[in-house]
Amino acid sequence: MEWIVSLLSTLGIFAAALLILVFFHELGHFLAAKLFGMRVERFSLGFPPRIWGFQKGETDYCIGATPLGGYVKISGMIDESMDDDYLDEEPKPWEYRSKPVWQRIIVITAGVIFNMILAVAIYAGLAFSNGETKVKLDSMDNIYVAENSLADQVGFQSGDRLIGVNGEEVPYFQDLFSPNKMMASSLSYMVMRNGEQVTIPVADSLLDEIGQQGLITLNNAMPTVPITQVQPGEPADRAGIQQGDLITAINGEQVGYLQELISRITSSTDSITVAVNRNGATHEFTLMPNENNKLGIVFNHDPEEYFAIERFQYGLFESVDFGLRRTNETVSGIMGGFSKMFSGDISVRDNLGGPVAIANVTKKATDAGGFVGFWNITAFLSITLAIMNILPIPMLDGGHLMFLIYEGITRREPSPKVRMALQQIGFLFIIALFIFVTFNDILRQFG
Image (cartoon, rainbow, N blue to C red; front, side, top):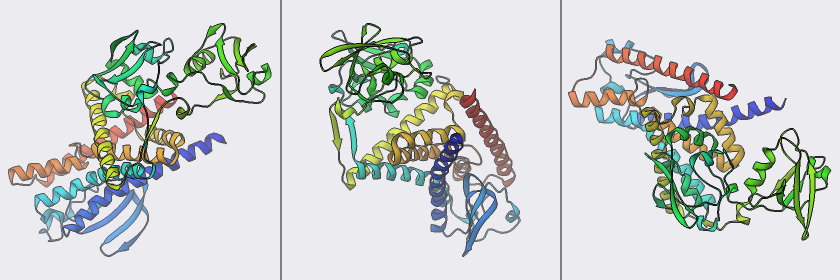
């Protein structure tokens, strides 16, 4: 029953995000077409068959049964419907084909522009309402790196102190892992190690795993802290460990970091001896982790308790500037990721996600960040949708734009027969890509 609730929750959150993205994308096409006097025959959320809608004026506003997109049908345009009956007739003043090239370019690119505007608006709205919270990097002491962890494979060592990324010192922890930094042409980190500055290059072969698992979190620098809660009936409770105890050693080895403590417990395959400091006195307990390699103890992970936090509050215009900067950084990061996939530096199979992967990411972001997490991932997906749509593939906005650029340069329109053939090729390509990413998602999820 629990998995059904989880599945329905995932689908519901994904559907909400997708509906927002598609609506704004198609609204861009719709408003631009109306601006230039073009007749819009249909505004559809979802693809046919049509399951519900209403007619207002010349436009049918409807919902389709296939919820993975949407479209605006403009009179006189060869689009997803492959309708070419009108080609035997003279162009009408309200048709797409009768308008100047520059107007048609605006109509075609308006969907992408609106997706970008949506991302800027979301980021700006979050900045205006919530501000921004960052952890000052100079307030973080050394980090702990577990043996054979991804950070260990990259080249980090316990005792390193993080200071910068890609040859640049940065003031905040979050700056180390921004999308544009992570997807730069080459990625490297700067640390202080034994009093000397060391540069750690990150091999492209590890970028896939970093994208899936992450690299370093605040837990790596968080010291061991007193136990916040002992769960009843779990191993720690049965052994006599209490709330407020401070774990100082595991199996006789001192632990100084929260991540070190967690790693040693979860990697244990046998009973362990835990030493705790309780009111200045040391007590030892021997216990067996449960089947999930846990002791049943909870720690306060709030970084505000351990690091210097800087909060930024933004006014209206500052928020818009923040939204623009955040969108630009995200675009740079996504484009860098695509560049690395096309060059073979990172795996297409491991990094190109379809509906299943996107739904899971959206659910995880919402679970982790609530309202803010949902809108952050929606903004990210809006930018991704814009970039994907502007690719020069027939059937996508970029394919239509390619035809218009050709027409603008040569002063003659590509023949309808050529456009129809390329549209069909583009359609087959998109279907094949959709099947590939969907099966790839399923294999990654259950393989």
